[in-house]
Image (cartoon, rainbow, N blue to C red):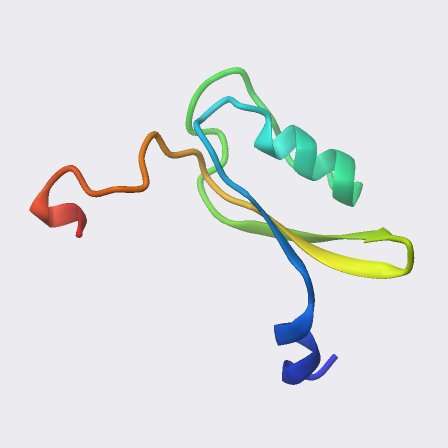
Length: 77
């Protein structure tokens, strides 16, 4: 797949608070076997997979949990 095709590919980003089921949903959509746990911080890096529906291929990205998308201190900017 060339770079132009990748940039036009629909992407589903799974983001939210820790332990909200993002990796479980990722596994269900992609058929992957990401490890899941009942404690915060299980997913520590971005994972990508693919989901196909009605002949459309979606890139699915599982992101580590976060409590906020805004910076709380100058170091986080």
